[in-house]
Figure 1: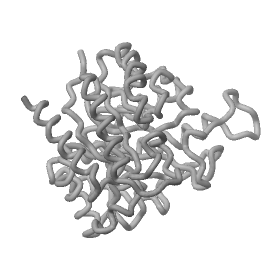
Figure 2 (figure 1 turned 135 degrees about the horizontal axis):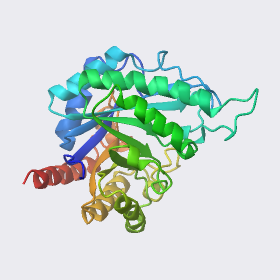
Figure 3 (figure 1 turned 90 degrees about the vertical axis):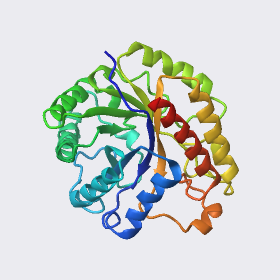
Figure 4 (figure 1 turned 90 degrees about the horizontal axis):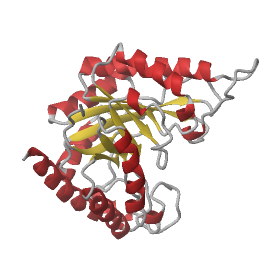
Length: 320
């Protein structure tokens, strides 16, 4: 039987989770404005821990700059006090700036070389720590990984990780695969909810949804939503929404057009059960400077109203 899931009208909050930025009044106001301006009913409390480089095998989740457990508790409880459903999303990043998708090791253990077994031991400790916290806080869903493209093929180790997580956390579990990778994950049956990063070019949504739909059909008992999706407010970004370093002038219109196209395409696909948009920082920029900001956050920009209107309609439809 398919898992029942309330429509996810969501926004990612707090990235990257810098220690010392989650407990002040700016952070509380940021979350309040997120709910008011976007009509969200879910949020993903999202933060990163660091390993030194893609072949390092130690994840230093207890150290700066990662937010403390106390900061996470405050953020989750603040979201819950506003009536928001919460996803806890711990993510691993590389301190040298390499994207986490490139974390990789030899498939066969070689003496004196870093190993998948060593990395997964550290990663399991990392995720289980936050699984226990998620259980304590009664969060609605736990995301056990994000865009780990090279690691996705390590099926048995992911299954072992999920089995260990379930000993400590009894809520819903999802994994956030990267764009174009939905069909590459061979262990979707082990999670409760399928999710991916929906950074698809503005004119490719229909074709990509056709492709993803085949994956969802293979796991018809699993809900699907986009754990990430969004577009910078920048000229050229609708064609490359995942490129945060793309050169281009600030453009609210470009961002708004992207959201309109994405929502229009997904609206025709009832199996898309929502979005966790990217992203809303703990400390917002000054709203009067919104038009000059070219990042993903739509605070004070034209797309803010587009999201509010769409989420308001979708949550109303879901309640009927």
